[in-house]
Length: 279
Ligand SMILES: Cc1ncc(C[n+]2csc(CCOP(=O)(O)OP(=O)(O)O)c2C)c(N)n1
Ligand SMILES: [Mg+2]
Image 1 (tube, helix red, strand yellow):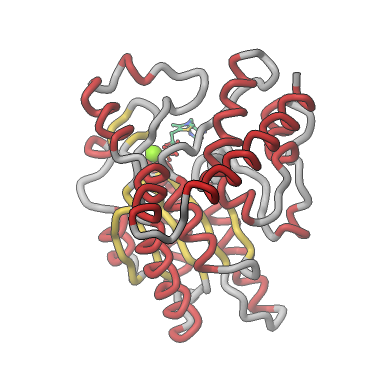
Image 2 (cartoon, rainbow, N blue to C red):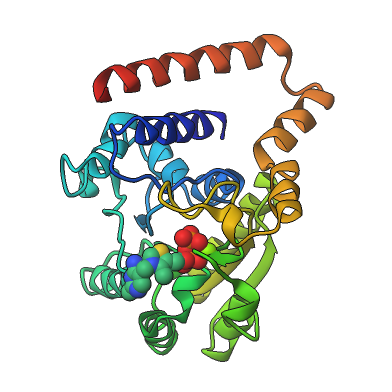
């Protein structure tokens, strides 16, 4: 989570300096991403949206590969088959159908791995998401839908996007689901482990809805101060999962100051290398 935070912050700074065209920050969503990615492990193919940077790093995507697309150097940056992490999809919810189709294709090949797809709250309003959930349900596709609900589709609050939770909607399609805070990495890990077990045992899809906070604007082109209350932004920063988890592990004696300093040094080095390659 600390490494993802550092790389994300460096990318934001590089965009401000004109080295990247755009950046969509994952800050505030690291616990949801790291908890879910570690729970499913390295095997399942992952279909991301566009801000799953912590998941990408866990899949072995190098920081400079992660930034390449946002500098307009390539369409992707990494080898999707090698990393089992597919290219970022900017057409909202298109990846949900890709994931269900991929899962059905895997079944035809006699493979029983499940597939993971990440989707935002706003993207669930797209028809593709409803088609994907219905197809996954009727075909009993082995798909784990992970919805990171950060409360916003750019400037549209989630309360104005839907009348029920995404988890409840999934059940309407016949998909088992769970809804929980995405700020606690261990709770996310446990929920996603359970979801993976459900998919393997019952050979049917599952949806996990994780409520998270979006610390920065939608993208580096978005000024969230124009449509979000100051208090709301302040509360999101105060409930930052990265600081909260680091503090908790320190209080519990799981990590100490020396460990933290070694991680900070590693992050500084990664940021330096990234900066040299992009400025
Ligand atoms: C099909 C389509 N419609 C509209 C857009 C423009 N757009 C880009 S991001 C976004 C909001 C998405 O919100 P959400 O799914 O909650 O993801 P978040 O950015 O909050 O992670 C919109 C409307 C798009 N990229 N694709
Ligand atoms: Mg959102």
